[in-house]
Image (cartoon, rainbow, N blue to C red; front, side):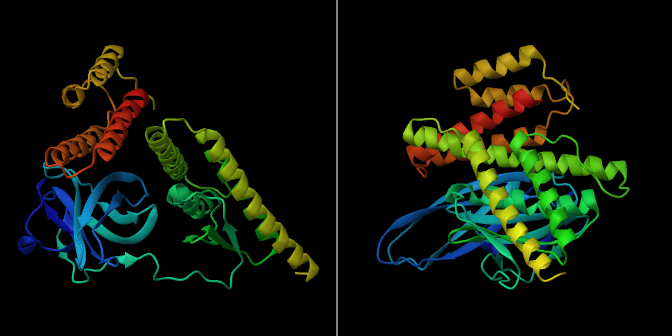
Length: 379
């Protein structure tokens, strides 16, 4: 991980860090090295580098399409996220994940604070370093499509935080990607604990089914601010899951020229997950028993203007118009607009240099446009 400007910096000038100075940081770059295991021919691969904050909110992603020549030993990919304006990074703990073919390959954490700390351990944490603990009860979910596994894994992983913050309880719970799909490991030490987990899991899946966060059933006496923060994080998790599904739906529409009923698919998958988890918990209970143990609306005219510009493919003017009205509209997430503009500029640069195929460029453009429309409609 290193800091740099929009156009990156030469390898000889990079200073690798594990903590960045928030007031002096522009772009945070990740450098990933890949070994080539197919040396008898030319091929290409596409990787996604996703940047998250400590609340697991997706701050941005960069897509890299790289051509590997015959007999190449490997490839080095760099990708940065941020802004050319210093001070755009808030103090927090962050992580970056490297994803290939919807499979998490590696991840690395870094911090943004008030000082710089150099990193002498350059390696990413490889996703396959830790093998699942087979001694605890586990549920395999075979029917999760490959292109949706990461999205569902991220949503299911937050269940542990949900139980901790709403119920005041720590649980033994993991979600791992395996070759067949996903695997949930869940463990409890009594019949009552399994009954509680069954109830909590059903509550948690309801948020995804309804696509909004309603009443949160709390136990104990948590602070109101704690519940408000949990609600915000839950809404982000639900939105991330829905956005991933919508993104996959757009990919299918572009590649196959048809619309897939993703809402029904999501409900089917959630029902499958619930059935598998509840069935395993019920089985465990039987074993225990047998052993006797703030909405702010964007002005209507501005919304119409943006959509008209999008219709005539004047995307650059949309970014300019939204930034001009930053102070006119409360709660307009201007950083999201800037990040999308960065993606748009990167895409145009790759198209000019013929570094990206027509179909992939079309796909990326559609994703950016739909993200802009989503921001406009939800403000």
